[in-house]
Every structure is written in C-alpha cells, then in structure tokens.
Image (cartoon, rainbow, N blue to C red; front, side, top):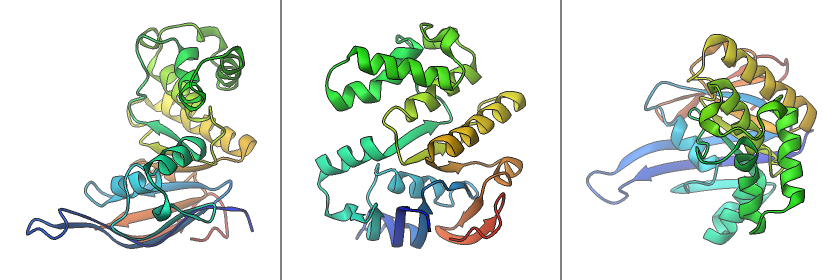
Length: 238
C-alpha cells in the first residue's frame, strides 16, 4: 500500500455557525489520498468542491471532523504550524497562474523557497532554473511573466508548485483558461511530473475528458462525496 498523504474523516464545514444565516457546505466528507495518486475532483458550481480543496490545502479549517497529513492531526496545530506544514507539503496551481508580473519566470519559481528560507541564494536560483528546464522553459527563464504565453505562464506556475518538493499538488482548474492544445500539454506535463517525482495530484476540473485520464474521479454534490470513479487505473479505491 502506498504511503497515505491525506486523510479526511467525517469533515464538515459551516459558515456563520450559530447564526440564523448558518450555511452547511460540507457534510461528513471522508477521503484518502496516497502517494502517487492522480485524482480528479468534480462537481457543479456550489457543490462544495472549492471549500473541500481549501480545507485540504490548509487554507481553511473544518468545522468538525479530522484532517490528517502524514498521520499528523492538523486540528492540533496552531497557525504557525499550519503555515509551515502547508509550505513544505503542498503545492498550488491555480486557473489564473497568479505569477508576479514584475518578476521573471525564475524569480517567480524561487518565491516559495525564498519565503521558507528567508533570503535568496545561488542554490535556490539554481533549483528554480532546473525546475524551469524540467517543464521546458529554459529559453524564457529570464522573461517577465507578462512576456510569456498563457501556456508558458501555467508551466511556470507548475514549476513554482514543485519548488518545495511537495507531497501533494492541488490544481484548481489549471487548464480552464487555456486553449485546447495548451490544456492538453499542461495536463500531460502534470502527468509526467506525477510519474517522475511521485507527487500526488488533486485536480479540480469541469473537463470530463481530462478527468477520465486521471486514476480516480471524486464527485462532490451538495457537500457530499457521492461517487468514486475509477478512471485511468483499475482497482483504484477511495
């Protein structure tokens, strides 16, 4: 059995708790992600999938239930501990790449490492350039973000997400703002990274054709996981 990266047990999330306007978004979610998993997360707008992604990414805390990362109960961590665990365990790729426009591709990839260490170094720059080479962007390593195509910018975002050697990469509609060819290229790149580095991927997507190429599809409707589907790999389980 592969190493367990993430485990959610009976996780709920409510907003405005105790008020007449209280809204229950997640209802008793159970989910496990193992090392090397490549999972699609699907669901209609308002289903709770973004809330679920934020909780898994340690950007929000559940109202009840348990979220464990490598057997560490995240509910027992303070904000400093949460920030440290998130920075060293989880990488993020967003639909809109969120690059810093005044920075070069290399400088954008360096940012997570500089934040973690507190200062830049030649070692950090060398790793950033190495990651850009891995995603096929050595030729534009010194280009400012606005001077790159949408597909190139998303490749920089993937390199940045890998800067800290995360165990899990969370990708929120990473191909949603790209043309068909660029979207296919980005998906193939994430697949290669998954195979080569062993990083797990949880990808929010509305593209059913891309989702079918994942190992597993998790569907969220009305704050509940309603379906686990085996996609690219037989025998995948929740």
